Image (tube, rainbow, N blue to C red):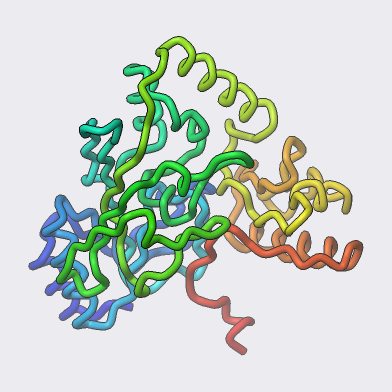
Length: 310
């Protein structure tokens, strides 16, 4: 919990851009989770730097939440400050067939920008939820193309809020659903992405094809956190869960999607414990039947339940 003195310091640094005791159920795509000690929405890089300096001095955990996809917050809540970079939303063309995109720009905004201008290369991002910052941090993508394939440079703020550094593609270490190699607490604030000058109609057609495919195969009209598990080498997590007979499995208001077994959806009234129970059940049953240990792709934040602390 954040003390009154620290709350005052955060308020002095950020003013109305900081809120306290915020429900994460309204911040995450699954619509579950307890209270966050604080939610900050810095209006600028300078505001972000102020926040990080206070957090470092006061030893407060800081987590960037974006649009809350790929994230589950436990019912017991989460310590420290959650950060939304929604105010960092500049998007512009640069010479050399490049786009400069700030971390708060949504995937929908980015792909629509490209369609309207006939810029090719980012069609694979159509329908992927969230923001550019999360897209980079998770190396989001589909089977044939990922963020790493279009990133030419990223801008990163240091954990203490003292430096902004630019890293070219050659200096970046992308992994399957991860970008590694930075100090813990570093924040991606923008990226330079490569595009190609294309035919607007063809860009639109490819975007529509991929979007239609996503709608056919994923529960995009229900609250979910996106893919729950990473695909094990040589396998698809959804197929393993489906083969275990778990499509449609319910825990409270949470269900393993009948459309795609690597998605858990909130069918109404779910809490984080319901979701985590399904995750644990799926992992245990798949391991029992196949010997394969599924690893979560979704990030799980928050305080342990009382029985876990006992």
